[in-house]
Image (cartoon, rainbow, N blue to C red; front, side, top):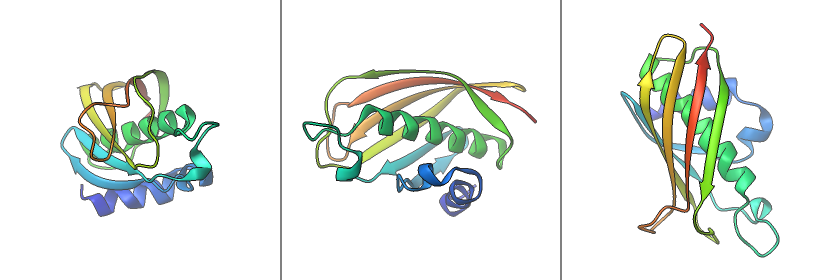
Length: 135
């Protein structure tokens, strides 16, 4: 799968409000994907930091792209569980969402996600997801 293929999946299979996040696929591989969440003041909470809801949605979406890459294309799937730990605020910077599939089974997939502000060394958040693969 190419980044262009993954971009097409974002356009064809995700709700309009997810598309309005402006996520861009930077990289896809056999068991991973890296997406960029562009900074937007519309996604900031009071105080100016990027909202946790936006980061969680980006992590969830990036997981679906990584699973699609690992499976060679989109298949019906749904989130079963997501746990996110926020470690530091993000203000005025894009966020890179690095998703790694840790186990890909026939009916379940597990992933670990690191969210890092562009240009920073330390993560802003970490997440873990479990997806049910429906087909």
